[in-house]
Image 1: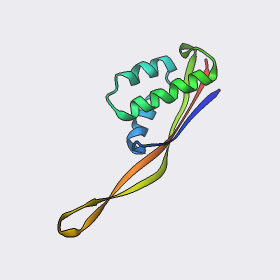
Image 2: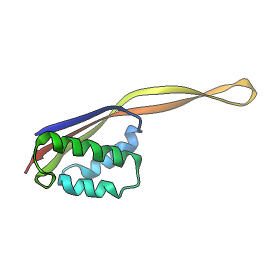
Image 3: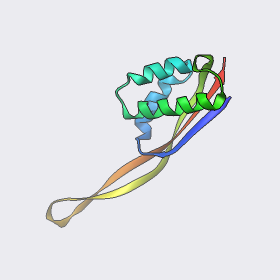
Length: 105
């Protein structure tokens, strides 16, 4: 079993979990092919983490299965947006930690 971890990536954890649930349990090669055509920022990031986990395992991608794909909340970057009449409102820019575990068949 091999792991890959990407921390503090600037993507919404909630939106990333939707993609992570799709690839869990899939063959790594099929997961990479499916993510290639998913029009989502999180899909490209998760594909890179899966490719890294496969490289860490030392096994070919067609012989690996995505055992788990977990997306945890990271710290939230807080920014200020200026508004009318000298007021300001907050902007939350969430980050995520993505952990992928693959194992041979």
